[in-house]
Length: 283
Image (cartoon, rainbow, N blue to C red; front, side, top):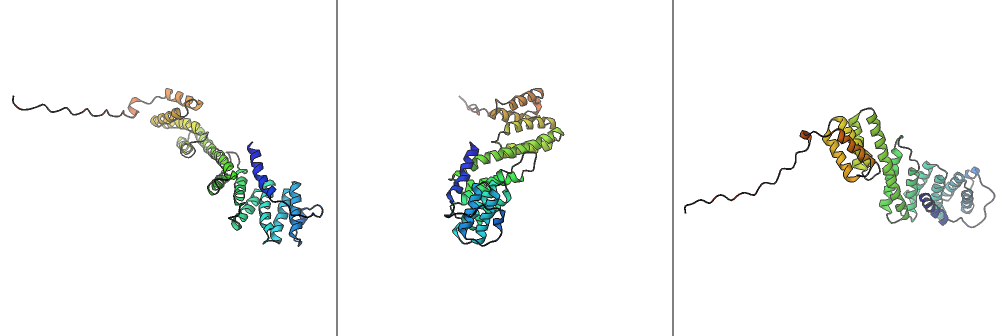
């Protein structure tokens, strides 16, 4: 469903930018990108035909040529955005981002600016790798998706960006968990605590929060601070009582009970009301 929704968003701009009237002259290839002066009609329709055949890289190169040969025409602006779309469709994320950003820098107030910014975010999003890899591009995706939501909150692009933001945050939390578990396996408990705390502090609404609390319970017990372990287990029980992570944390605390002397002191009872002083004087 999400894939179909994204496809509709991407198709929306392509459908709106209809080809110029007129006929193209035969099949075009990469040779079309050599500088041969041609009218905008011929160039634009050649690019359109390549896109219809799903020759996306060839289409992008010809759309670039429209901008190069006719920089001040209305078709140059449209070709710029179509070039960004076709590079994206071809999987050339760097060139797609460059084209979309160039469009935004020249036409920041254009009605298609939300789409161009969304396309930048989508290119970063689709480069996200698994959690074992560096997550620099993941953070770029998060920043770009957040910018779409901030700048164009009422658009369908913002609606899709909000969904993707949740997925990206969950992915970043997964990276923290992967590193934390790595430290745990090597008994580097303090380093593990730092990673699991980051999940609780920065990604507490993600699916990784329950496990992070259980891992904190484990790590604090290994560090010899059962009070902190008990606190983490209590938070886990209060928020995720029906999870396997809470059951594991509960079993751990049953095997490693907090000594009575180490438990937090109970709150002092409220002071008793002052008794009235005995009456003095003679009868």
